[in-house]
Amino acid sequence: MLAGPIDYTPGSMRNSNLKNFKPIDPGLPMSLGTRCQELAEYIVINSSLEMLADSPDEYRKYPDILKYLSEVPATWDDTRVLNAKVGEYAVVAKRKGKTWYVGGMNAWGKRTLKSNLSFLPKGKTYSAEIFQDTKKSNDDANSYSYKTVKVVKDQLYSFNMASGGGFVMIIHVDNN
Image 1 (cartoon, rainbow, N blue to C red):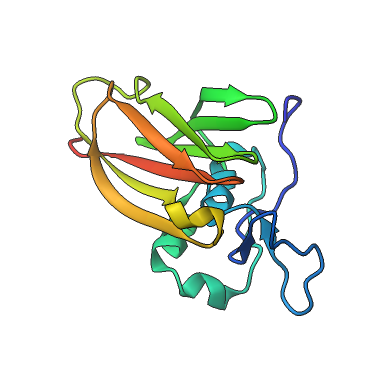
Image 2: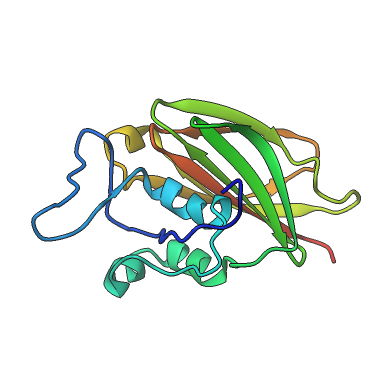
């Protein structure tokens, strides 16, 4: 993506780690990486035409993910790289209107990354929706947690990512 956007279809809901991955599984296709890495791809990867890669029934099982996928933009007003090392990990923040989306993707091997939210405007309060890998995600790539928290502009946040994992943070302004 150094030269521009790519054509990529994220959003698989049948996720697998390296140990269990089958490129051609009898019956149903699967993706390599955790559920949260798939969600982060909508933010980190620049693709001009986003779509869903799985059966509608799979998305209906997860209302929190379905809500996220219905709202995540395909075009952005601002982009910031917060933390990255080529071939290992990337944490990118993108803004659409007043909402910031932060996506983190990890290569193979567990990792904890720390990022602050210094890009946020001063003088406002924020809440965030967070999708992130769980301790079980290294064995079960479908495992994830979802929570809503208050966030502060300059606070340092830690994100644990499974091998092939990721996270998503959607930051909303509380006071307009």
